[in-house]
Image (cartoon, rainbow, N blue to C red):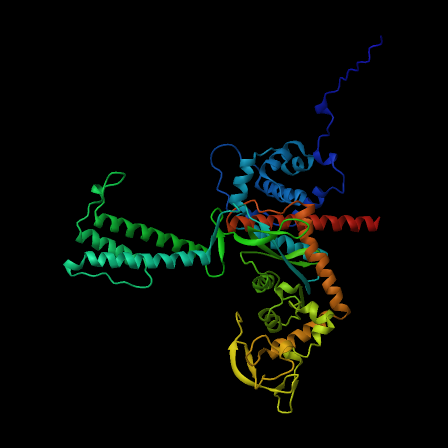
Length: 525
């Protein structure tokens, strides 16, 4: 039988060429990345590295930074162990690291030392370079937000309202306890003042006085089954326990702050938000961060990470960041109805921007003719010669008072009017819901703004702006979450989360830049 065994004398390590670059195609993304990074001064971001004095010679920090950034460009969000493995087996990473193979611990130390507080500056410098090279249009900014699940236990919530209720219930228990203590102090002529609320410092003062008056020795306190506590020990320990609970509630409310209603015990920076979990739109209450982006010509021009559940509160901080880093405001900020508040419209008007944000009732106003022309809506009421409002039954509305608009930052007010007489009105069932005379609130300035927005967004240009926002802004999150598989925050703490999101966004912009360069080359060919 013929021997089919074939022997090869050439060793496998001799197959590769002398240079890693010879193994890669000229259009490889690592070459696009390397050429781009050569025009960025990366050394200024390496100033926080400690001076090297002893031990092994450190890896080239510029190569390390390039490798980290290329990892986020190549993978979307890359793990440290994947970086280590790629430096061992992937020619692109070998090319960037000159054949060196740092461990995942080395990459982790480098990222936490160099990029912790500099990722944002690096993002905007790289973005500005892309904007210059690609002649990006900054007049049109497409805004959207998405909630990313935090790296926290989903059953670790702390609710602000629940904490406040528990604290007030505890105040009641403390008052009852202090009344009992006053009964015990009656013979001494001393009395503890009872209040509706109690500060920790006040309770600490009471404890110190009781310790002195009753001559308590905590080392002699009895505990456990079969021991009888004295009234002094029992009340002293109970008050001390209440003091600890008061401090605990105060700490929780301090972590929550003024603008949040909840936080997670395992990541204090994360807020519980409704997140869509499947394609049917079913949601779940999970700890998350609200990531806001402003897209210009498919690039992320501005980025912000917030703890707010509502997008309305994120609009102004995002545009302020845009102005801070680009020196201008966009001419047309385009967003969905989640951003259409009176404050945001006034902010746009104040800074010379044409507001292109829908408001919550935009769809009904533009497509539902029955709703738009409803004669029982206050905005559709007829007016007399002297400006008085008339209901469909011909009754006048008299002015009652003015009140500040809730949450308004510009001092605007709305007017409250009441019908002079609704008795016997044939339209009462359709016009009002209460047995009293109908009251309406009018904000004529907001009504005027809504009319301007409708006119701006329903013409041809407005239609194109809305369509582009859906493509560019929502499409950006679609690529990040589905194509590049980044749908959950890995790190904990606001500083670490911001660094992570900025690195992912740097990778996205570089990825988009390479794709466009490839498209230009294909068109030229």
